[in-house]
Length: 237
Image 1 (tube, helix red, strand yellow):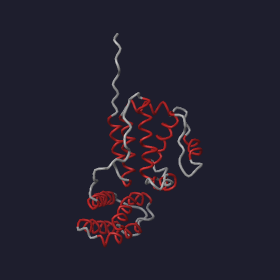
Image 2: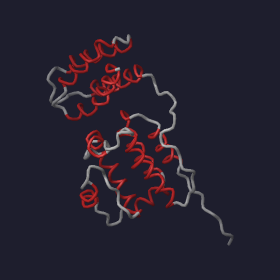
Image 3: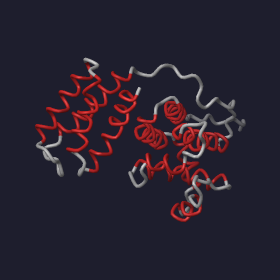
Image 4: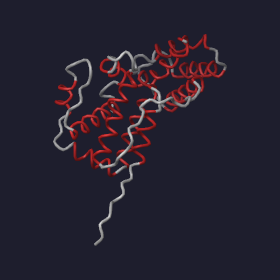
């Protein structure tokens, strides 16, 4: 029987990684979910990770990794793959707060933003480890090249607000609100109109009104964080 080299199909995984590296911090939750989804759909990558996870104890590894003001990845490559996979999974499951993680463990380099440092030390490292295990050679890539201009910030804010509004509208009952659901919907609709008109002077007011209205609802609060951060960026310029 002739020898042949079995082809490895990992495009979904590589595309999810690239999309994360080209993204902005406010999309990080969604991008991590995309990476994990791509792993589930990519047998070759899944098998590498599954093998590394055999008898792996993330809780113990986490204790060792966070003894300093940065996360120290394990030296062993299999352990490093398992650690990063568990780290991403815990972020996706909301067991670890990504904002807290970046502030606490990826803010030590004044020359590199925490999100970019996280991508370099975790996301790119994960990709390179997987490729090495699969014996796929790639050229070292520039992590944060000159990026193409992302979506206009006003269009982005409009999209995030509409997504958030949709979450509110489809829920029949929302617990722990300081105002009625209809009032929250009305504030969001007015906020969206202000964004369309680029009336920046009202952004902070609407953001604070919504933030205070949902402050007891942890799920809505975490979803609104992206919007609040973008408002701060726009207003702070």
